[in-house]
Length: 365
Image 1 (spheres, rainbow, N blue to C red):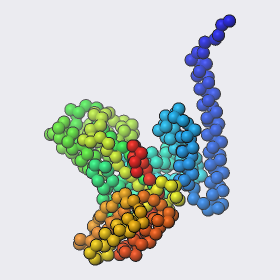
Image 2 (image 1 turned 180 degrees about the vertical axis):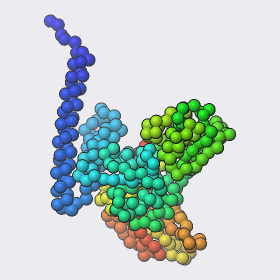
Image 3 (image 1 turned 120 degrees about the vertical axis):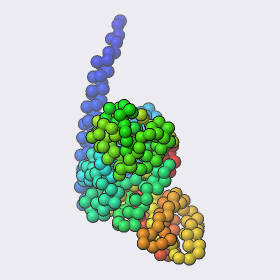
Image 4 (image 1 turned 135 degrees about the vertical axis):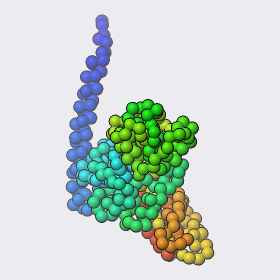
């Protein structure tokens, strides 16, 4: 008795059948999502339910039992869930442009490829577009693990009325790129001020006689490099594809593990997800120990302070506003109580939003 040997064409036929089944199920899923969107419209419920999405990821991870790579599984279902959610209502997302900046990359990471993206010239413009409702969401950088806070973002919170809806933490790897791919052709290195700072040691050691040129974004630097054979740019992997540039040297950042945190701006913060942050903008009373009083409230209410950053108030010498990030959602009783107590101690108080936090690559908050 002989047994037939399985061939590559046989297995490929199985894969085609599986792919066809996946496609049919995706079509059914997006139809269900649209039906849910209609029901939410009737009941005036928010389109985005972060708790529901977190529960989906946790259930799938448990069912998977480690068979399919977990990061890839999450990435695939993130794109599926985002696409289905966007089918309920098309979203326009503004970001610091031009195309292929790290902010653009963070936006794609958060909203997927199905959203419509709008490049703007400045962080200030992103805030203005969201406040005026011309875009559904905006995405802006707020801090870097090496260079610290992005002050233009913090200052914009003092000018515009928007709310934080989410955050993205993006691992940053800087590439030196140009049209030819030859380092000898580069006479000037252009990029945003922060990437230039994050690569200063590498540039000093490897290109000591080549001047640097700060520009308003990495995407703008990539555009310049695409148009001038003697300009090199420090840019993202997305910029290489977008502007058809060649990599001169990969990973020229001075420190590994470089991460930038981005904030998603909108008109209304999402509901409780169970893994949230709450952000405040406050001004303290003009008296000794005013900031310590606020920190005491956080301690007494068992609130974990994740970040505090001060910024000078424009036009008022030696007066400061403080940005606070706390772990928890405003709907949680201890967070609400803490915020109510802090409000009474402040000369200025603004709740900037409560939103799902983004874990680091090692799973930390």
